[in-house]
Image (cartoon, rainbow, N blue to C red; front, side, top):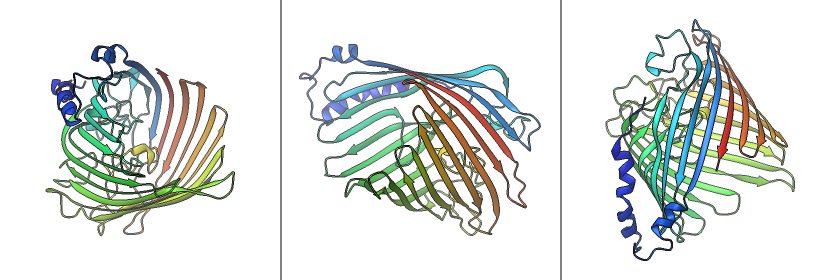
Length: 414
């Protein structure tokens, strides 16, 4: 069970006077009385139980069982452009436990891994400052989602989200432009463990016209041992990239969404010199009011078969298939070409995705995966979602076949 550290809770509170001074705001002349800001705070709650079933051909037993999380959130009303957010989280199992939730026992357990352990503790705790000039600052433990979450995310599919301790600031006072940057010294992973990190995020976005966005970013991740299993003594990296995304309107009913992204990953701090590979993605689709179809192609490059681009802080479930077979990119790199379809009819949405994988180096057949889901919005604050994923290895690969099924209920209040 995770431990609650006092410094995580107290750091945002200690920052309140500093933020007031930095903003040039006098605490003696508030727009709203401090007591009223607390008494008029907003409470919210989320409950998310899930049934999990995982079958992997290289494991003797079937993973099957229930997990859930409950998050209680309170957010103050604004006071001198400041707000305080406090969240608590409790995650646990439901019924009999027929699975392994310990990533450290991945190889030794006869069960496929279900990485949702028991946990109780602090979730987000932060102070926010936001003014009318477009300046926004967050200090404390917080969700961080950069762009499409390919490089930095909270990976919220897991019952325990990934959160970061530090400061994030943005400025939107320039027309059609947003500049942002952050520094984080610690993070809590999706197993509830806190680890030291030195993470610097720099990002600039520009919207030259409606429906079009261009971004440039530089992320510096100093952490010798990351979630990915590279075998290197130090996997610290930096990545520089550019991204264009938008929608091309074809007629009154159909739009053509597109995305193009290019990046280069290099060693950072004491990172291994073999960390040197490119990343790119391109995609285009067609969307109407009820349906979307699209095709995407992503390349996580390889440095001559020595290292494949890694994304240890990504939203793993949004890329390369729901089975997470490519949680760690093979050293030969990864090409992922996939087709996506989505159809909505009232409160019901159908989703499907088909992936084909091969290596960037060596022309290896890494197999294929299909993901399917149906979501029903039973009530405005109640969602039910059924998902199924199937991965089959390519010819000549020693990888297992994987079947995963989830049934999730999401209830929100406030």
